[in-house]
Amino acid sequence: MNTIIIEDDFIKNCSCQKNIEINETLKNELFSVNTIEIHFKENGKLCIKGNQKETKLKIIYSVDPNVKAEIIDMRKLSGVKIAEEYHLKEKSELHIIKFYEGFDLKKQDTIYMEEKGAKIFYVLKSLASGKQRYNTMIYHRNIDTSCEIYHHGVSREKGCISFDVTNIIEKGMKNTYVEQQNRIITSNMKLCKINPNLIVDEQDVIANHSAHLGDVDNNELFYLMTRGINKEDARNLLIRGFLLDKIKEEDISEIKDFISFDWR
Image 1 (spheres, rainbow, N blue to C red):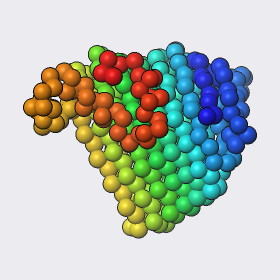
Image 2: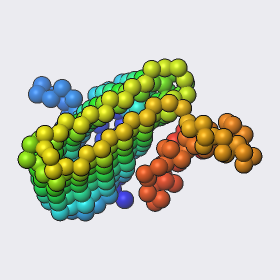
Image 3: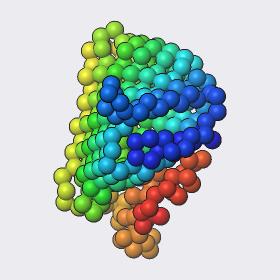
Image 4: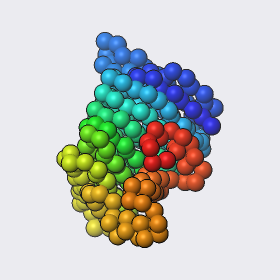
C-alpha cells in the first residue's frame, strides 16, 4: 500500500507508486507553514500515519477526472493546527477514513467539488482527551455532485469536541446529494458542540443532516446487560461499535492496532 509517515510538520517516510504524486514545500519567507501536496493521477489507496506535536501543517489533495482514490489517515495529535484542502475533478471519487487521537487540536478542512459528477465519502473518527475543534466546509461548485460526511467523536478524561460542518450548494448546482451525520459520545461534563449547516440555494437537491450529542444509548446498554455483560464492558462495546461504524472490514484491523484505548 502507498504509505506516508508524518512526524510533526514534515514527511518522515514516503513509499508511493507512480499513481500518486507527492510534493513537499518547506516553510520559507513566502510560506508560513510546511505544505504537502498529494495528487491522485490514477486509481489508488494511500495510508497516512503520524505523530504530530506542537506544530502547524497544510495538506492539499487533488483527484484527477475519473479517478477513484482512497485515504486512510491515522494520526496522534497534540498541540497541532492543520489545514487541509481537497479538489475533486469530473467524475472523480474520494473515500476518506480519518482516525485521530489526542488533544489541543484545531483542524480546518475545505472540500471543493469542482466538476460535475464528483463524489466524496468522508468519515472522521475522533478520540479526545483534551480540546479538539473541527471545521469542515464543502463547496458544491458543479452539478451531479455527491457528499456523504460523517463526524463521530468520543470525549474522555478532560476531552471536549466541537464539530462545525457546512455544505454550501449554490444556485444552479442541480442534482446534488448531501448526507451529513454528526455524533459525539460524551463521558464527562465538558462542553461539546455540534453545528451542522446546510446552505442551499437550489431546489433540485437532496440534502439531509443530523446531530446527536450525549452518552451511549441507555436502551442498547440495558439490552447488553440483560445478556450478562457488565455495565462497563457493555458501554465499551457500544463505543467500539460506534468508532468502527462506516469503516470497511479490510481497514478495521489496522485501525484497531492504532488505537491506544482500553476498550479494545
